[in-house]
Length: 324
Image (cartoon, rainbow, N blue to C red; front, side, top):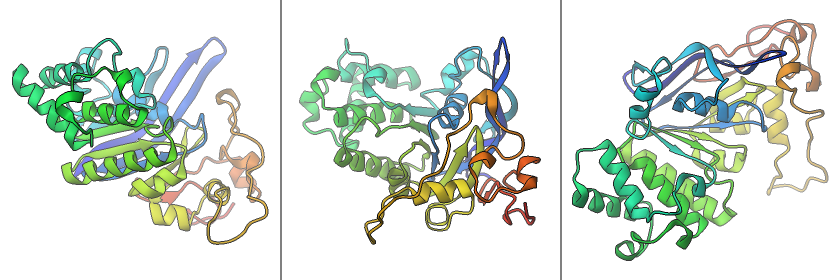
């Protein structure tokens, strides 16, 4: 267990409303080890980003962690107050978000922003922090660092801005990085560069990475393991090879079947019928049962769960030793 950086157990996130309590994340458990990239994938509204925000302590009120626990290298962090979480964020957990312009202050030079972050989380003086900022910029692939360190965010391309955000996330040598759709706003060629950069930095530094995305191509290229989410629950967890090539959950099978293949001609891609249920209309039993062609009586009565944090599918159709 010593190499487990992130350990989430039975996490439940709720949003109280006038008409009742909505459950956005429903009892998920997962682990990420040193140097490992865990990809979290699913449709919009599946609860991926909400899980990431819970780990970062950035849930917007009235959202709250109603049950479960989050441990970072053995230290429980979900019970910490805002002031304590501020010391955790940046120092022990780095964050990379979808739009780099929301992470960078347009009024300040990127070098000043890097230096400020480094000095906030380390004991380096201003001159030392500036040299550290240059080293980080070189590490993430920014050319002509001596000149570009004094540029403003708008003077960088989208891909270069995202590299600066990755440098910001690495300033204090964090144990964990939560990357929420880090390549969505970029074109395909830049996506490949950013995913390769994340993977390389993860391996070299031993940093654990939670990569939140809806892009299975990014998952296949970057992640070691995959967690598939549906309606706030984990549908399947496993290695990239197992989940992509040999999916067990009907939802994962549908996701994989909707991806075009370069190896064979297909006249029509598979489609998952229907849509994900709203939070106030999640059906009893397996949340996927209204869209599943193989659902049986048990699927409409009982909620299936994954047996371990490492691999498995939350499905009654032979994957948990039983049948629907």
